[in-house]
Length: 168
Length: 102
Image 1 (cartoon, rainbow over the protein chains, first blue to last red):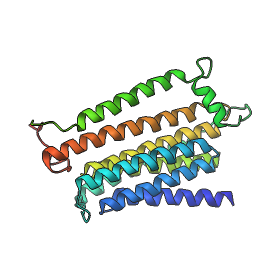
Image 2: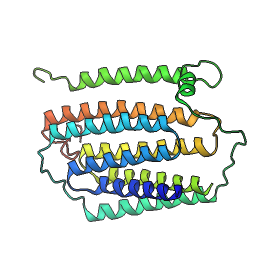
Image 3: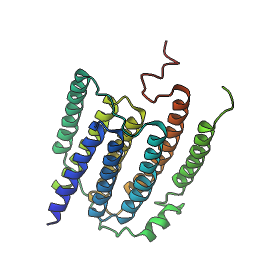
Image 4: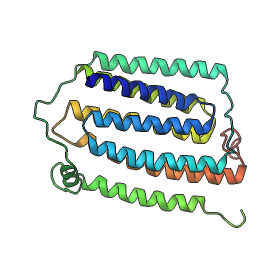
């Protein structure tokens, strides 16, 4: 029964992902992207990482997709149709992507993964928070701080880029 | 292990769907959507390896959290650039933006 949910989630991820990159209506592509991201969050729920699923929903679905839809409305008319890429380009891109996928898939199938034999620890939000601010063994305070500075720089940078100048 | 390989194949497929979209689309916002798909596939990869191979550690989990943060920063900067380009060129098709082209 749990396998059924896994297959359902996987099919939804792939179908909506393919619709995202092939849809001709740009607004529909954004909505398909939304569904893909929600299904990825469902996959995290299936893997029992609830915190990652919550982060996925809050940041991607609540943040990035809304940002993309806002910028769509700022730059397009509503009934805008995307032009079709040339058939030759689509064909060769599909071929190269298919070969790359087959290559990676054969690598995974041929590899024997070794499971580390230690017992699984439960990943609670408490332990995630403690590890994130821990500067000892197994702590992540340095990347946490670096990412916070990066986020601040991106915020200031995007405001500076989008700022309307008087006359260029 | 078969379940792990199945989810890995799903994440590869999602990554290459994103690569296909990035290579065929000409519109900048749809290219940004394709990049988001690729970043999501990478996130799934990290989480799956953490879940099935190193269940006692949390490294993959933290990598996926940091990748999510960086994806948010990247989307904000990219959309600022796109809106600025739209003001200058009245188009966000990447073939129309040719100021630096020789």
